[in-house]
Each structure stands twice: as C-alpha cells, then as structure tokens.
Amino acid sequence: MKTNILTRIALIGAVCFVSCQKDKPTAETFNREGMLKLGKQLDNPYSVETMKEAWNNIQQNNSSYRMMGAGITTTHLYLKFKPQNEEELSLLQEDSTLTLYTHPLDYEILGDGDYYHDPEIPDSLPTYQYCAVPVDKVLPAGVSHEVLAKLFIPDEDPDDEGKRFASGETTDALVDEALRITDNLEPDEDQGNQRRRRKWRPQGSVQVYHSFSENKNRNSRYIPVQGAVVRARRWFTTRKGTTDADGKFSCNGRFRRAANYSIRWERYHFSIRSGTLGQAVYNGPKKRGGWNLKLGRQGSNFVKDKQQYYALIFQAAHFYYYGDRMGLTSPSRNSWWKKQLKIAARAKNGSSSHVHQRTLYWGADISLQKYGNYSDLVFATTIHELAHGAHRELHKNNYNHLVSEGYVKPCVSHWDCMESNADISSKAKNKRRLLETWAKTVEIALTRNWYINHCNISNYVFERANYQSVEIEDKPYYTSAGYDLIDDEDQSETFTYLNTPNDRVKGYSILQLEQALKHARSWEEWRDNIKEDYDNPTEKYVDELFANWSDD
Image (cartoon, rainbow, N blue to C red; front, side, top):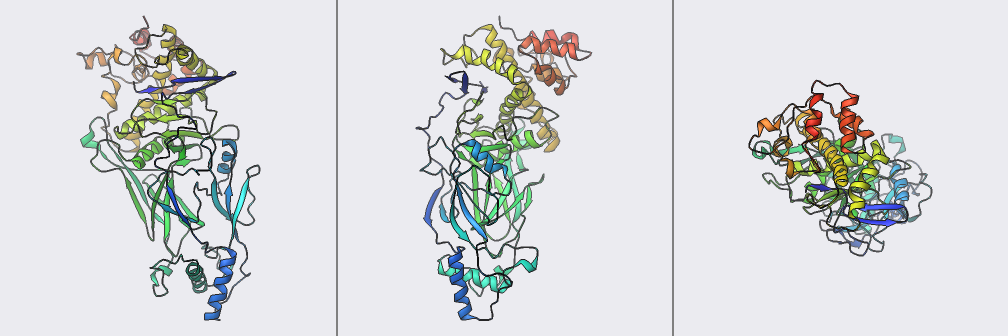
C-alpha cells in the first residue's frame, strides 16, 4: 500500500489526534542519530571587550589607524531565543529579518549531522533559536530570550562608505587582531596574504539527482533546486541568496574572509525535518568563493543520500506552494492562526501519511517514508500527502468526516485495518476510496506537470504507465478514476491482458474535479457532482467508470 492517512488513534476529550505511523515515536523514544555534534565553545572575537582590546593593540603598533565615526560600542546583540511552544516559534519565523540557527554560533561544529536539538530541551518543545541582530532591533513580543553577548561588527559591507567604522585597511587590521587574541586567526589569514582582502560574494548553484521509475536510463539527470535559501555565515554575519529556476543563487552581501555555507530546508509555509524531531539542514563547506552543490550520486537509481532526500521533498513542497499547481487549492499556509506545515523526512521505506490534526510540536503534519525509492516516487509521494492537506483546506468539515468514517472509527479496535484487504465496512471503504483517489489524481497530474513542463522531460511517464496499467483489485482505494476523467486513454483497450478499468471518459479538468469534490462526502456524491455541475461529451460513461470499483 503506497500511502495511508492514519494508523493509531488517540482520543483526548473531543479532540481527535491522528497519526499515520505504526511506529509513531513518543517523547521518550526519539533517536538522536544524525544530530550534528558541537565541539568546544570559541572565544568570541566580536565581543565589545575583545574589539576594544584589539583596537588598543593595533594603535600601539601603528598610530595612523583612525576611526571614521563613533568609537567601539555595541552594534549587535547575540541572542538565544527560548520558544516554549510552536506558536512562539512561529512568531520568530514571521520576522523575515531574523536569520535563525538551531545551533549556537560560537561553537565548533563537528561531523556531518543534519539537524540539532539542544540536549537540555525536551523533545516535545522547540529547541533554542540563535541569531545576531542590530542593537536597535525591535524583537518579537512574547518570546523569551537571553543576550549571550554584546557585539561590535565593523565589517558589515555597507553600501554607504560614510557609515563605515574605518577604512578597509584599518578594519582588516582590527579584525585580524581580534581573531589573533582569541586564537581564531586561521593559517591562511596572515598579513602577507593580500588576496583575501578583496571582497567576494557568495554565489553558486544547487542541483539534485533524479532517477525515474519508468524510462529511468533515458531521463535520469541532475535537476536545479528552485527556492532554496542558501546561507553564507561568518561568525555572526549571514548573507543569503535564494536559488532561481536554474538553481543559481547570489547572496545579498560580501565577505573578505572565508564563510560557512549552509541550507535550511524550509520556506515560510513549510519545513522539512530530519526524521521527526529536528529542522533538516545541510552544513556545507567553509570557503572563499562559489559553492556548486550536487546532491545524490549520478547513476544511482535509488535515493540513498539523506540530503538528496530532503532536496527532493523540498522541490515537491516548493512546487505545490509556490509553483504552478494548476490552480488547485493550496495546503495549509503559515499565518497567525495556522502553523507552519511540518514534513517529517524519515529514512525508511514504508507507508507515508498525512495527519488529521497535529497538537504537539514534534507531531509532523506529514510523515514521508520513501527513502531508498526512485526520486520521482519521493517527489510524487510528497505531492500526494500535500494533496490530503489541501483537501482539508478545501472543505475542513467534509474532509474530517471522510477521515473519521474511513479511518478513525473502523480502526479504534482494529490496529491492522489500514491494509488494502482489511475487513472493514463498505461505508469505510467508500470514504477511503474518495480520499485516496483524489490525492492520487493530484499526485499524477502535478508530478507529470513538473517533469514535463518545468523540467522539460517531454517523454516523462509516471509510475506504471501513468497509472494506466494498474489492475482494479490491486488498488481498491488509490484508484485511477480521477486521472481517467482527465486523460483520453482507455486502458482496458491498451492493456487487454490486465484487469484494468473500462474508461470511456475524457476531457474533464482537474479544477472541475476539485470543485466537485468540495461538497462531496462519499464516492457517489463526487461522481454525481461531476455529472451535474459540468457538461462533457463523455458524461454518459462516468457511472461506468466509477462502477469499476465496487464495495460489494
């Protein structure tokens, strides 16, 4: 079974919290494997005290150094925010001027971890958020914070020369001395190396390798990642750039010295987690010059690289939220009354899921378990689960009714009732069929739209011949009916040797199907709404198409 909506049910008063995972973790069972490790805390070269000491030192060696403006005073604050719940975390995320990190900025980072959650913070709460802000920055109200250090940052690369602390030569000497006395001056940052004095702008590209379940040898390739925010950080200063349609980025500022590249796999409306707990990140190299990142191994059919996995999920979510979703309703969007959608990217190959209602910080809205599959199936499954979320946005009450009647009530005393051949009532099967057929319809349509129209793979074929070679009994819930209403192929004639549906319907649009879905609370209501609301030359065959899947 490709995807499920739920597996376990916990009823708390009148609130129904539904998870789709048979192995849903509790706060006591989270696995910290893959978490980045911190080394020693570094002596801070940008503290006001250190900078004053460094200034005195360089003045003693060369009295010609002069300041252009005010003396060494606090320009920035190094902060640790302490959100107590997801609402407070959302308040921080709403402020686009805050560049948040889940790890402290004055520690060594060891290893290749892809998330960080402070060990002293319970798994049920958001971890600390670190950033540096101008001293006069108005902070989001209602979120506790601690000032870790008062900073003097003279090398902010302002466009207005008159706002600089001092000349480039003086600033260089000051920062060099601050780094030296804190034991942070790197070997290649000696006074004789003039090449580093030239400013450089972080830029480059991000691509991810795609393999395909059909026509794989012909179409496998690297595809640009659009919409990823690439960060280049040197201590407390971060420059950012967003990848364009070609996967290229150019950051909004320059550095004189090497900087740490990274990607935080999220946008305002959605966030990808490493497993269930931590924000997924890519910690790139510390370097001068451009960064051209290719994720996934060329020639590999299956996704075995976690960063490739995150990038594929990111591409699908970004396309659904910010791309050409063919006019369809969006999944839940981050706002003051709604939470950022969380996608748990779990390194497993099993049943993925959309959660009916999330109540805890670590309870992701979507759980993806397509690790080890073809790339296009990772992409498509992400679309499928987002389609469930969008269905709920289309009409919350009707969606909740379908979930309750199709999954919650039948499964309260029957933990294995999620399987396709489960012994459940015809009524429950009816509700499931509508839920899953719609999500499958969006999955096929948007995935084909993405690869054909946006990746220019004109010969792209979706899984199992665009789902036309799927036999009726093989997928009793995840049917091809929705896509059959759109396409012009009758698979019963194409695949005569298989028990595929009779499909003489064609020409409906996916927007028509979504509008007919809005007020549907059963498989038959969706069918009848389609016939009543829209004129179509093949309308007389709609009943025949839907009758291919029977609950009897």
